[in-house]
Length: 243
Ligand SMILES: C[S@@+](CC[C@H](N)C(=O)[O-])C[C@H]1O[C@@H](n2cnc3c(N)ncnc32)[C@H](O)[C@@H]1O
Image (spheres, rainbow, N blue to C red):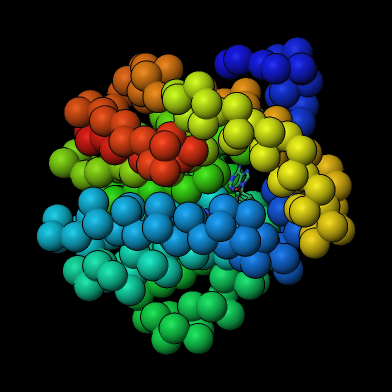
């Protein structure tokens, strides 16, 4: 894993028990997500649902589901889904997600559970669709999380991973990194009241493997037919794979 300022040990330490940080910012998470991404996160999430339409999947697991934005969007857009589970380590994020699920009246098809991406409380070969949006960057052992996703996925199923990445275009990258390092942490800290959370955000984005590097890790975890699609000049990337 690349690093801008930190040693690998420091990177690992900063990801340890990261869900407790999400517990602290849960009340502001959705608002900050939409405002700091200038609404792009809504477009990225809809790209995920588009990949799934027409596939006929009925079982679905969204790992690191947070407040459930990705989960809820997919359940609402893909009407073949009958059993959807959102899993997260942060109780406060899940509590907000539960209210949103009740408001959308999709409780009969959607459940939220407390659990760890590194030790999924889910049977092997039992889920057709597995997603993780902006979550894989936060786990302490990326390969282990991918292997767990591969384990629970049914043969013939699909995994979709949405994650931040670093734009390839040099000029755009300069502007983006300036925003990421100087503007985003200030706005994020002011609104959430948590300075650490939004300094952590830019560090994890800059040090996380993206594009072909991430596809290689997916391949080593067992996935096949891996593809990577950059979104919004490569600020985010949508990875898709099968088993
Ligand atoms: C950036 S949020 C993404 C939430 C949601 N998927 C979204 O798209 O808005 C990252 C989430 O990962 C969760 N998380 C971090 N480590 C985890 C782990 N080991 N297992 C499960 N969830 C984890 C955090 O609690 C947090 O809710």
